[in-house]
Length: 507
Image (cartoon, rainbow, N blue to C red):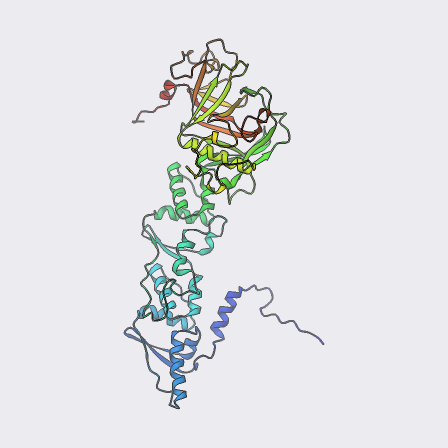
């Protein structure tokens, strides 16, 4: 027996099942009320006459049930069903004009936020399932900074941008088509509650317009850092995490000398989900260290890599920028070795952030940590110990090991520092690194550490994070340490170097 294949749609045309269902409900009207009869409905001061076909097109509803009961009661009593009582409802007739157009088969779209709220409230009150479903799929209508916006829901389809302020806040009343007025009992409800149109008056309409422009895929010129800060602040307010990661200050480039892709990022913009450690095949090609206390280079584990969450398809080698003048370098010249010991001390928020970063790296390496991963990278956290690199498995003490190799570029007191290690007795490291045209040799002040120590204050520094086995496996609690390898430093040796960078208020 020959079987026939029935194709419901014409070949070559793709139809959304929801659209097909909606069209079927609009054309194949169920026989709930007699299609040819006219039923009177008075809304407020205005009388509407709708056919049974119009009322049945979006049913079961408040209207269909009311007139069904009348027809059934007349049939049970053997009475003539011609006299139909008028249904009176004390609601807005202007809003009902749009609803009557919907029942007559026209597509009705909200014009703005107040119109959407009225349509949605009355659609719920009259129990119109097809109109409720249609409004559920509509754009988000919201006022931001006293300006009306109509936001398509699919604009938040990029990873990281949903759930957000709109999908969560807007959903309270307008994104649950199966539940009528969440939190209220529908039985005995004389009228729906008054609902204010969604509004965010305390945010900038201009900034949000630029955010919408970015979400639509268009490029946006960042005027300055204040402009970037405004965009980031509102991205965080509206929980647009994917867009936030695109906007943070960063630089991605290919380092031909190292043959690696690199990403430069500020420490305050690092997120724990983007951190990884990539193992190195061999450390034989590592450059020699001009200042380090590692006489015998420990076996290298790898370098910290980073991928911006929701944005980057792969991880890049991280160059971490630490600014805010929160880093102090300590040179210890009395360790009886050819190379002075070098450590970094952090202060304020920089100390907290570097400590949390070390905790996350330790967790990625499956080393024992002092607090769960969910609390890392937060200021303070829930650890019983104060934020300090010494309280992490990757460091022993509050000072972090630092390496200044031959490839590091250092600007010290406003001039390039050569990194010369052949300095005479009682000569400071900063003076030894200057050429003959540099600043005069300076007598060390009382601010220096006793016993031949010297300090640099780093205004802004860029570092690679190298993970290596500590010497003899006992340098740190986990036998593994994180070393900061200098890439570029802007530093000064004391108050005079800092004062040289000051600017007068008049420009």
